[in-house]
Length: 303
Ligand SMILES: [Zn+2]
Image (cartoon, rainbow, N blue to C red; front, side):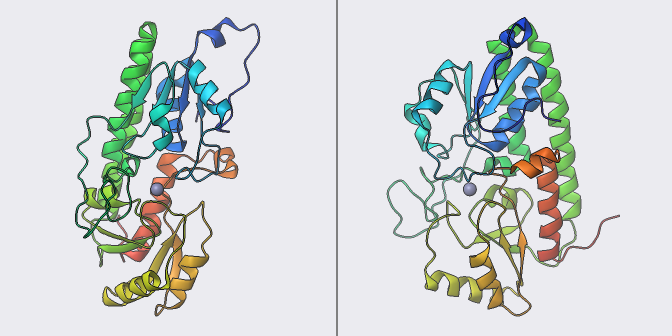
C-alpha cells in the first residue's frame, strides 16, 4: 500500500505533529515516480505527484504554484531522458534524475529526421519510457533511494530496506514476465504510442506503434493505412489502446483488420482515482499488460 494518496496536490500539513515536520518532502513528476518514491520513502517521506491523477503527462506543463511547491520541497524526482522538458528551468533543492547512468540508445533508424528528435519525435532522440522495463525501473528506485539516504542520513537504513523490498518485487515481476512470454506464437505487437520500446527490447519483442513519442495529436489517414497493412502482413489482429486516452482511433483501425479487436496496454503514465482507491499500482498494471499482451502474441498459458 502506498504511504500517501496520489492526488497530484500537496498533502495537507498535519498540525502539531513533529513527526510530520521531520519528514522529507518529495515531489515526483508523474505517476510511476510517485509510486517508486512512496515505496522507498514509506512513512519518512511526504510524497506528492506534480501531474495529477488520471492526467496524461506528455504535454503537461507546470503552473507557477507547481513551481513553488517544487522549490519548497526537499527534492524533485524526475524521469528525465527528455520526458519532462519543463524540468530544465525548474528551481529545486535537489533534482533526482532517475535515468542518469542508464545507457539509452539513440534511435537513429529514421531517415531525414529532425536535428534533436528521432523518427518518433522523442526529445534528444532517446525513448524515455524506461519505467516499463522492470530492470530499468529498479535503477530508478536505486537513484531515489540514494537521494533520500543523502538528504536524510539518519534514516538511511529505513530507505535502504524499503528499496530492497521493492527491488525484490521488481525482480519477481521481471521473472514473471519472462515466464509468461516464454512461449508465444508472435513477437510483434501494435502499441498505441511508442512507449514499449524498452519493454520490447528486454523481452525479445518487436513493438510497432500508431503514434510516436506521445499518445496525443493527429494521425494521418496514411499512417492508419500503414498500420492496417502492417497488421495484415504480420497476421496481427489485436490493436492496443491506452487507459488515459480515447480508444476511437484504435477501434477504427481494428475495424479494418480481419477479426480485429482492441485491448489495453497501459504505459502507466498515470493511474486514475478509482484504480488508486482499489489499491492498484505499478506491479498490478504491469501484470494486466502482460495478460493483454499474451492474447495479442498468442502465448501459451504457463503452469
Ligand atoms: Zn509515453
